[in-house]
Image (cartoon, rainbow, N blue to C red; front, side, top):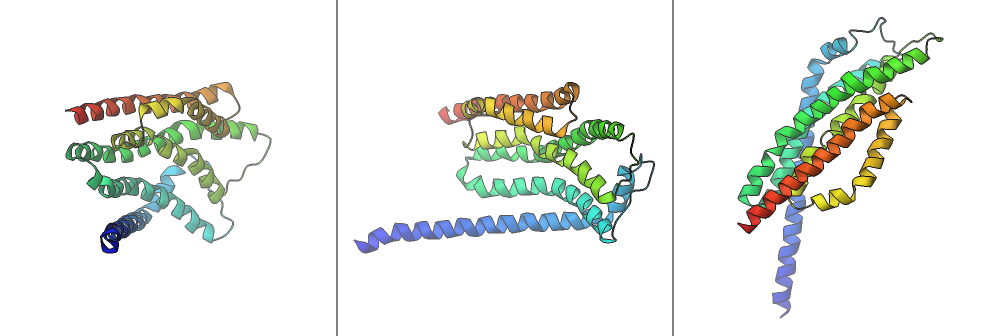
Length: 246
């Protein structure tokens, strides 16, 4: 009797350890992809820097030699994140793949290219719409001051205005993926609508100049993004339910 009850526990323990080993290997592979991407981006980082400062009337100042390395690492890091996101998505997909049906595997695999595209779209929204609006407002306020930008502060500010939108714009693809594997449902998203609206509005107000037009320009796309995510979740949920009945 003791032998028969210990066997399932043994198998469970081995299965759990096996999952942990696989998860570790997926994380390591993702980290390697990030490091390789970072190294590759570093080759072209000077070109990226020159393009980003093309409209500035003055050269950016540095307070220490190490500031240059810090700025270059920041810029290369953003490129590396953009490249690594689909790799990380593929690793997550491979990890959950055994628990999915053949049709679910094929469907969820299609979301991975969308992760990279949505991240780039979010970065573009932040850089071409939010960043000029905020920097223009702050420069008007600084009319009575002599402004000297340091490279470190300038790019830290720019990335704070752009990179978060890259991740926020991932919402539709992430929601569709989680709905496909049964973690999320349209009902849960609908219940969380008020809280989500509140958090997205607070985020928009915090990162934009204190005027209603700027707030609306940011809040509207974020709320629209949430509603698109809910709609896509409904579509995936219905399709998943229909497939399971068939």
